[in-house]
Length: 70
Image (cartoon, rainbow, N blue to C red; front, side, top):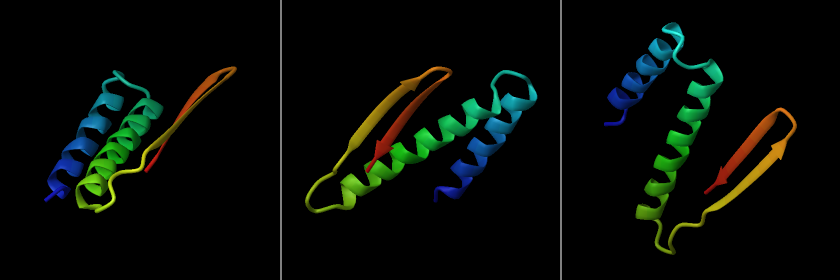
């Protein structure tokens, strides 16, 4: 059931890049974040022991990294 939504997200991301509204890195980061959040909810709803979630933020000169682990 998720395939039409993934297709809509891909088309939306490509159009945002084409219209110079976002950089490709913005679209890729947003897609990664969206997939991670959905997978986390999916795991928390199907797991018997409950969700396990970790996050890490690292700031270095010229970049910010945010890592989510489920």
